Length: 549
Image (cartoon, rainbow, N blue to C red; front, side):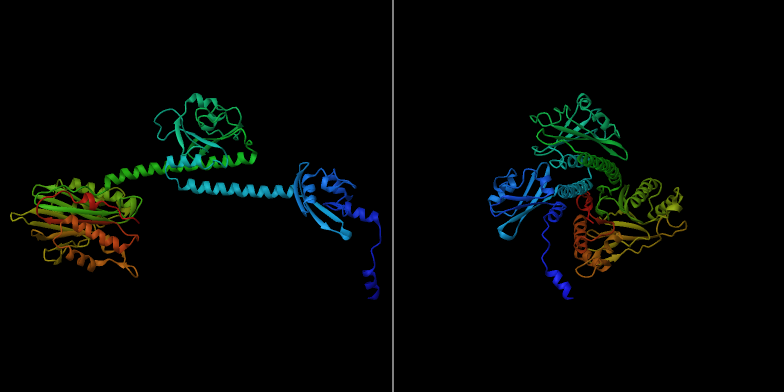
């Protein structure tokens, strides 16, 4: 133990050759100086990284500006580019007021850090682009995003050359955004311009070759006026599953460096995502057009004015994206009054809307041969069951059919047939609520279905209210969600006794709105009939409004 302690406390042997070998074996440069900052020693790495330094050189005046400045200013660190390498040095004090500068070559380390930052920047750009493109549901919106996103990150100007959809002319169109443009600009490019730009025709055809920069492209027609010849141009095809969607042109000013391989790769990835987004926007546009056509054909109609009576209808579909659903109403004039229909097809959305169209079309045809409510319902039941694929679809509808007949004293006689639908309610002028006793079975469900017909007389001022279960089953309220229910509906109708049909529809829809408070709901349809003078259809304003959610 004593020997060990004595050995540990002994002085190290003074072997300058060994010390030199140790210094030369270090991976960092070491430069020692005396108290006057004159170099006394440089190791092998220092001689390689800082060949200007040797013993006797005054560091304050040495040809390494960053190091000389640190010495003169009394600093302890420096960071500089020297002979193509990135050097970082730190000063440490030694005995006798001498010093040592330890200098590291951080070129590779900094390159890795810069590569990591660049990759993070590219990832952030693609994430931002993906989010923006994903939210662009319309073609024009997608094209605007395609040219604004790359500027100024990838280019000083971006141009998308594309063929319009649907094609209205055999000329390519372009959308451009430059750093100095307040907003994207559009135009039509001639085929001569397209052909003059190397690689543009190939990109428009979806050529699979790698995008390449072109320094001699003639883009005067599509670039901002006065911008001059670009320093570098990169053209990338915008591919999609359905074929070529266009071409993305990125242009840089002459004072900006060209596109390096990673930027070319990033531009191609962005162009591919833009092409996919453009194809998705076009598909959405086609579907939206089909939805509008379907919607316009299936929305409840404006109610015709009938002598001796006033009617109003209200309708809201469950979905917010397509204002059609499974609830419907209709009104057909007859020689002595009118024939109304109100129903609720099973299911929601487009499938229910298609069956709604089938039911309404069948009623439109069958009423020409039969106008008795119960008899017409029986014919409709057979027609739905005889339709191709009816058994496989297993679809049906609840339905009310009512024949309205004018009476000499100004009243109305209503014969109402029910097919599994909530009973209509009569609102008397004194606020009394009387259900019309109809029940029956759903239409289109059973071949031997039974339907019930009842008769009710409406005096002047009385109202007949037919509705679908979307009203009573609307879930909401101030506390725990609960159904609007029959009791609330009857109280609302009683408080609205004497109102015109359109005003009562408005009141009921407002009450249901407040009850739902933005919650999801089922389709809603209502039809109100009053004995009295003929008036304009009430469905135009109150009836066709859509409830969000």
